[in-house]
Amino acid sequence: MRVEIQQVLADDDRVVVYSRRWLPDAGSEIAVVDIGRIDDGLIAEGWEVIEPVAEVAANLVWWEPAQR
Image (cartoon, rainbow, N blue to C red):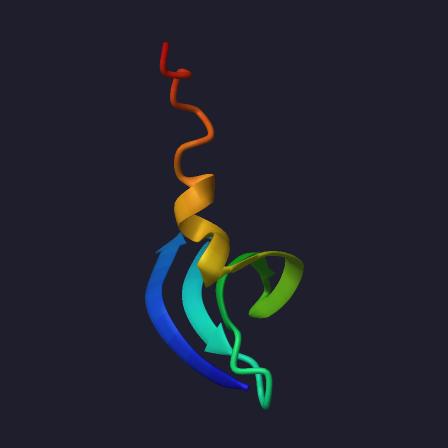
């Protein structure tokens, strides 16, 4: 898998990493957000959100009011 880290944010014991990844052979590009909590230098909690990049544009408009 190829991973390109786009952004890293940290505040106190919380860390957020946004990356783009390409799966081997399939070539599908995915956008990933990893959220973690650090405790004593180790990852104490972690969450990950994954979305295929091809679906991102459609998901950006779900909150817009319907056209009349």
